[in-house]
Amino acid sequence: MSRWAGESIHDAILSTLTSAPIGKKITKLIGTPNPDGTIATIKAYQDTELLFMLTFTWNADGTWIITRT
Image 1 (cartoon, rainbow, N blue to C red):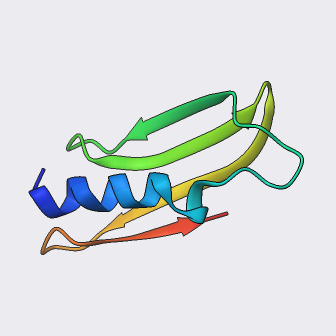
Image 2 (cartoon, one colour):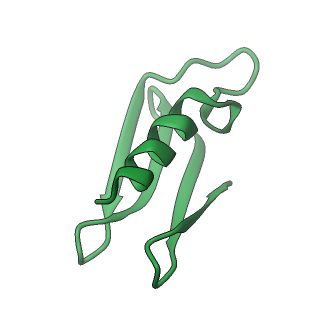
Image 3 (cartoon, one colour):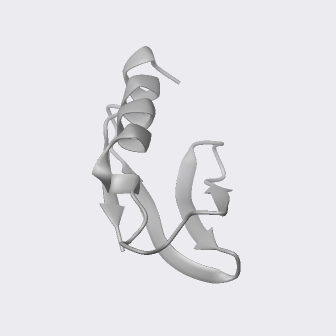
């Protein structure tokens, strides 16, 4: 992983992109890798309730787009 990808992950984690909805608390994170070992998704839960999912779309040049659903 490039230095920039690592910084992007760090910045995303600290931003509102990964904030729990109002009144909720993240108690569990589950990541899913792509076949090449890069991150495909990260799901955030409060106990068994899915709060949101981050989907990572990778470009050929190693940059990415993070989408929250």
